[in-house]
Image (tube, rainbow, N blue to C red; front, side, top):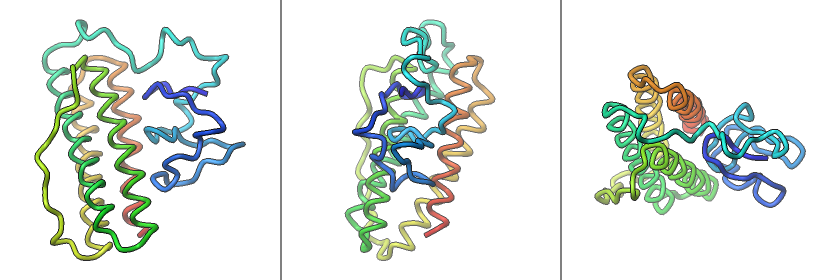
Amino acid sequence: MKCLICGMNININNFNVNNQGLLETNESDHIKYCPFCGVSATYLKPEDETNFKEEIYKVPTESLDENTLIILEHAMKLEIFNSDFYKAAAKLAHSLAVKETFVALSKIEYVHAIVHQKLGGFKQIPTLVDIDYSKHKSDKSLMELAENREIHAARFYEKQGNKINNTIIKEVFHALWSVEREHIQIARNY
């Protein structure tokens, strides 16, 4: 099985990675989400149905206007910012379940950044300034911060997706908007 958004191959060895960052867990006989980027099964295709040269996440960079490239760069930075937050939050979390959720969310957000990097043809993933989150002393406080970040990300994809003139990137933004909305639910369910 292949994810048309992040391009990762999904198999019996990896279908359940990042399960803690998914609203519902994947099972070997029922894969509901890409375990790497979190998109729904709508974007997953069996290998025999996938034309590997025409994956949804590939567009010629030269066909993108400057506005779309700027939006993709901002999206990449937003996802790195959120990935870095989850990495830091995992170190601060008290509960093992919260720690594992943050680790999984960090990996998923990082894959989102890679998707934007590929779409925009950017040479490298940026390194952002480290932020100290140690004032958040409880898992509840960290989850509230996570919820706010996910709300911001979902709004970003919704608003900026309407400004993009490329149908493939619009579809990717819609898919990632759905993932961020599920991350909001994960944070709220804590």
